[in-house]
Image (cartoon, rainbow, N blue to C red; front, side):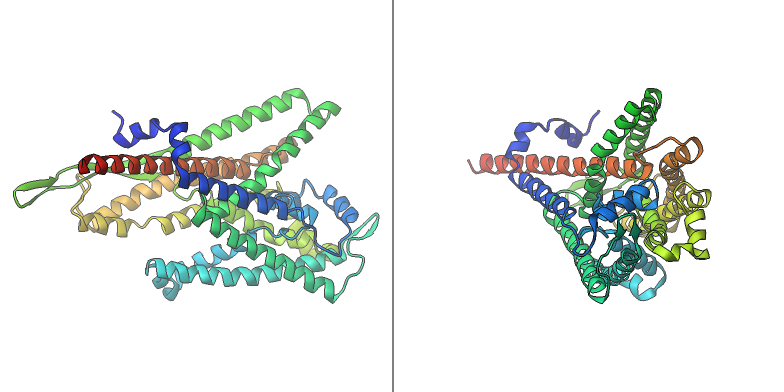
Length: 447
């Protein structure tokens, strides 16, 4: 039998949406913020020859720079003010969260509640500025070394070009960080995830057009397109199934007497998702692996050096070492981020504090060990699933030379963010309906 919340969710319709004024404002704010971001991906940097840049990226479209450009929404290939996108912020978040797990002072801040999280966010922003400065300076230096059939990419290189490029790209990244925070607080969904989501979705029409053009010229058969479409549908179905899958642990609360009345005695469930980390592991893994490859891709003449050749050869897109490291990082961040978002010890203490217990398990440390055992097994399955989804296009491209335009990481991000955003919208609608019922009840009571 469906719960009251599920019955109420099923009754959500367009009329309820039209009455939810606050939700409509949040949706409009999110839409306007994403439009501002997409407009910014077309504002070019000064001092760069667009013809040479286009020639260079046409050669690198299937390489690592093409993959970086997907997460930047095409801003990197056009070399706009948002060329770095929000990747420095993601890298800074990885570093701060790793340090919070090993540095006692940062770990204490994490346990201080909202004030501690605000302090960690402040550290993350400072580190984002530092990383953006380093990456933008390296990018400006690489642009100065870039040469094409039409000549150099930067007609007038020098200190002024490097300074303006570094400052502009860093300011663009920090603006996106601020915009993502505004979407999270005043819009619908996680701002960082939605920015990456919009970047990936923006490249879907051109990818479809490219596949149809290859089919028209005979480079890609109709059977291959059908095969790719079938794989995409199967991957989407798997992502939806796993992201909604959860293990429900029965929690029992004893009866207690307050005065002459009995309270409690009810049973509920503690839901543990199969993939508690969400899309964070592949995003973190991609940002770490793409950082050295991006610097090598823009190193120009330095690419002939041994270290640059080794990185390009062994850590290139679709290479065995790249896939092994990618899978290892995804699995590592799956366990790491799951440990960050869910602490079995704290959960067991909270259950004990409010009198809840798992049938057959003693409260306290035994409950914490039981939850940790269940969560570890779930995380193993979730991590393997994410690694397989993200490595499938890499394997198809490397072994069978199938041009898999929609990467597994991209599909995972798009489907997961879509489901999360829809769930948040539905929660807003349900909350609006509950508020309407409460207001009606209060008015009826007054009469």
